[in-house]
Length: 91
Image (cartoon, helix red, strand yellow):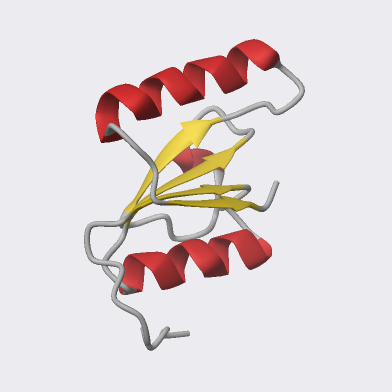
């Protein structure tokens, strides 16, 4: 399926939790197609753990039941992106 972007998110920094499958993956792909810098999260150790196409996305492991995992993600994203423009809380 090809998404037709109707909005310009060029350069927008987007985090999609649970972006490795289903609705979260479709949302992440739409943001990539619209020019955003997209980070997706999942519980697997790395992006290779998923059968979906994560091209154009940065993958980060996240366990929402582990406060340390959440803190680490926030610290990593703050260092790499400086800020977030969009959060899709899909997990």
